[in-house]
Length: 133
Figure 1: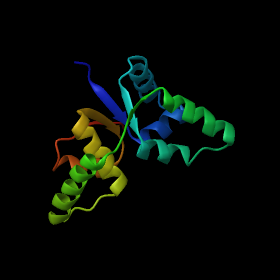
Figure 2: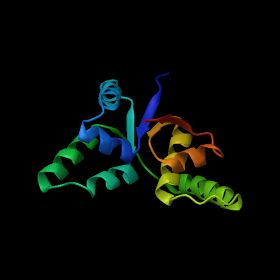
Figure 3: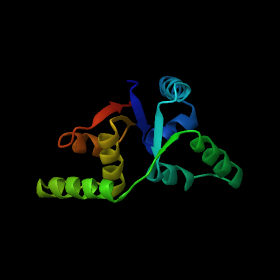
């Protein structure tokens, strides 16, 4: 079975800046292998930062080529469970990050990220991370 990935918005931003050769190569390679997934949270985080209408349309078209993960009630139940367990341990993370993390766990995706919150979440969930420097 092919390994599947979700790329966090912070990594996509660096990819589009095209200043980190290793990151750019990794993302392009994964996209060519058709193993990149996205959800509405990551898509919205990126599209809201578009610099122009042309940039917005270009980004949106690029994301249309990726596997899109829907969020349903069952997933929100899992997210709620995780949020409750983390909160009971004194850990509070942004809801967007928790949604991304739980969706990765539920879909057996490795999350390519550069956000300290995911390291916290990983300590309590079976989250596979690939940290970008």
